[in-house]
Amino acid sequence: PIREFGQPIAGSLSSVLGLYKAAVTRTVRDAGLYPRDVPLWHSRFWDRIIRNDMELQRIRDYIHNNPARWLEDQLHPKAPPNPFNEHFDRDKQEDDGDDTAES
Image (cartoon, rainbow, N blue to C red):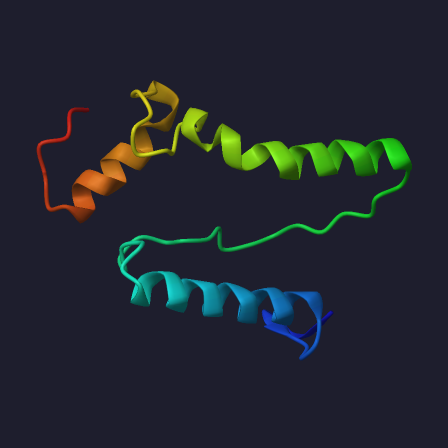
């Protein structure tokens, strides 16, 4: 539920997730485990109604297997270059002050 545009209602799923993400981010960064200038989370989430047991199992499998697949993700820092994701590299070079990005 949203009170005004972009303002979650206290106690809603959005509020709880926001508080959780803030607490985890603070803890991880204070421990020096993740850079302060790099986002730790996606900025949004999408809710979905689970309609049957098969869909529930598929979602459980996704959640269970997702961390192991991070090494295969094109956004992983050690992933090989991918022309479809070159805008991420360009953004990083601009952030680093490197103006030598090829067009």
